[in-house]
Image (cartoon, rainbow over all chains, first blue to last red):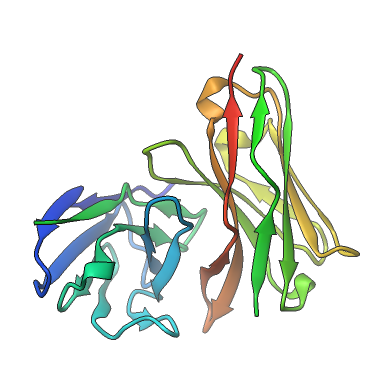
Length: 106
Length: 121
């Protein structure tokens, strides 16, 4: 099975900051990488699919990049509603998720 | 609009089984696979398996292979996830999610609201 490792596991940031979250796969997954946002008590929400494609309705401050084993999710200017936990997921083979990155208010 | 509506919270004793439903609406039920994902309290997301509502074929995570059964009822556009031999570690929120495919890439674009299953004696 493919293991997904996210870093950091948590971070503190201020409104307006640029935030970057990384995700590493245990083997090459091409661009079969999705990013989800989850707020407390809510279901995950798709942000990015195929490593860099923005899901319809998602603000353009979210972007994704990478291929092979290393990927990043960037929030260009953090907004109050972006404080949440973010998960990467590989869909190259049997799906698996990263451990999550909690973005907290500084 | 696309909606996945799940059944309500359950409390079960160890060793029992639970069956969670997920009713789809707003799209052609048989055109999209459905995933099941669970999340233990304070933990991350764990993929359990997938069902093709068209033919009913399934694929399960090895961890749940001998305890999980996913089925569907096309007459009501509903998929079901049954987990048997419950133990305390199965206490979690269980989600269904629709699998979409674009340019060969698949992703979960719509999720149910989640069903809390509590296993306690």
